[in-house]
Image (cartoon, rainbow, N blue to C red; front, side, top):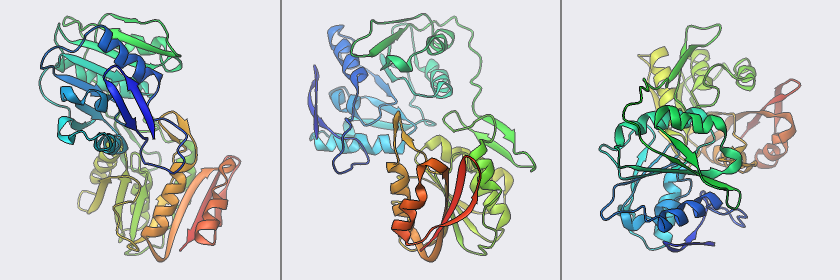
Length: 375
């Protein structure tokens, strides 16, 4: 476990989910720069209302817990990581209020701290939601590694919040300072977005943090063309559901099946829910924000459909896919099936065959492969 040394104190922090021999820290240089600047400039006033946005593993919330901050995140894992790190440091978890990305707190704030997200659309949506919670005295400070801050990033702050400038770089990190301009004519947020799925009458809902908001990506399109159609009254889970299009088409192919949509993104699950209920208003389904299938009962599922992500925040790797495969194996009934699509070079077939003892290629093209493993 690593020690996070900042002016606010020394804290033991870990990434979440916790993994043996974790080589990556639960914070970055942008977190350090941000907290040092807050202390140096004395930005925290007595009895402040502090809003933290996009705190990945709770590093900022843990360091500022004495000030009882409110934390907004779209990530279930970020919430769980925050709780775990607070507990690890003996801090009462009630000192931090957690809100999801669709349930923002009421009232105005004195200090707003933003970790700039990878997605410009997500940042745009968040700045729109933030604006009604600002006043002329609110201090707004954002941070990220330099490679994540572009001219388009600064233009969003200027267009939605007000005058914006950046700090000098420090350890490849940079800060963004923005001043609320009450006179700006901003308009409404463009999110969520909607489009009709080609070849169907289904309208997909896409909140700002959903992958491929404007149209269907080529991997998912390939997967949809080969989904199973013989599940009967079984249970189908769309794991890592995004906007829920895979589960939606699986439901169309299997009218007697029970659908469950699972993702760690609150915006993804809400998108899936809105799209499914629009397409099948009389049909029941379950929608859950969770860490993979951790809360799903053992040996209770007939089919899992999975297009696993190969990154967490800005870290690329197959650890999420491996976790999804293991938890799918646990959740599936004997004879249950895991269907996976991935880029050919990721070699998911090796991992699946080792875990399940079998792996069948359902379809392949130059870029993608669809695999099936049976428990």
